Image 1 (cartoon, rainbow, N blue to C red):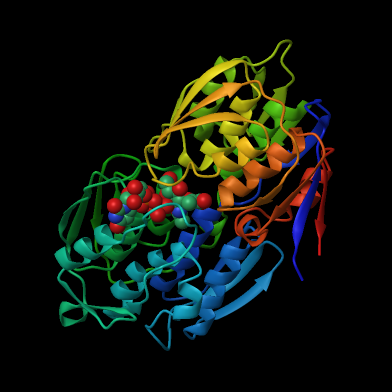
Image 2 (image 1 turned 180 degrees about the vertical axis):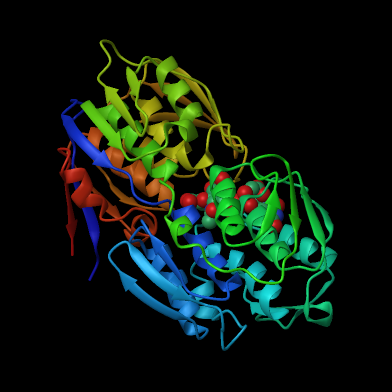
Length: 426
Ligand code: EPU
């Protein structure tokens, strides 16, 4: 049975209205699940988004002998005594973020085996930074054609000075977790600064780790012998990418949309771009209200950047917004190659987007969009296609919904509640 989303477009009319709540952050939840491996005891994760990636990573823990009990937006996880240190290939390959499990498993058990991780197809996703860092921490690596086998010397990683050639989010998090149980001090230089990393460091510190400098480019970790969970800390932070996607939706299609339970201070770059385009925005303590502008929004240039710059994960929704803004906008994707190929589908809907090179496109707006049959190429472009379908004329079908379910919980129900005509057709 082929499942797809049917989105009935408004033809550009601003019809949406209401409040939409933001869930727990996918990219924090996945790291928290991996961090349970470091503990001596059970953790209870709350505000856990009910999404495919989270379910798959919990499956991975279970498949390796961990205990998992799932409830509504929560899970009890005890991964303190895994029976196996081989990351089940069929599950690991489906989800790129499984790579973060390597750090905790190696730190706790002195060895780990894993396949090259899968996930979204957004250009080359190498793992050299992880491998180089593990080598610096005294590990050895062997590849047998199917799996990488990494072993720590004498069963325990050694603290080391690690300089990351690129700022990598999962690279920083993986080595951060590995270093919490290593012997001695580890320094990570050119560390990524994303809020999920700061959150993870606080979580680990509350469980007994010694980490300082998270949120700066130099993080110092003094290894400890044991970590024990601190109950209160395992509430997953709000998803800034989900919040940002809803804000963009409001900017393009709403009379008034209140995005609730978010952390506006994590969204400064997006809010600045939208304000410059002429969108009225009101920032509350934990909410953002987006209102219809009096005149057509204007073009703004966009360059994705590591945090606190414009997030690559909001580039696709924002590009849809720019197709409905007046003038020419340059979109420069600096993080991932291949993360602009979805623009070809927007052109088929009637957008006027010229690819200048694999990292840059020129968007000319406003252009009326027409419904099409689309294939969601990755999670974020999938959500961008839903937004494009909402402003288009006619019924847009978006296939490959698994890619959207990976990161957005019950998206059709939540969008319907604010006036979007969307159904999951099975
Ligand atoms: N890189 C390397 N070598 C490595 C690892 C990364 O060269 O070993 C490069 C990448 O090719 C890329 C750059 O470093 O050019 C930055 O990538 P990064 O490692 O930061 O990305 P990631 O950690 O794999 C996380 C998020 C992504 C998000 C990026 C950038 C998770 C699970 N994933 O990926 O989220 O786009 O950071 O912010 O945290 C998503 O949620 O849809 C998603 C793709």
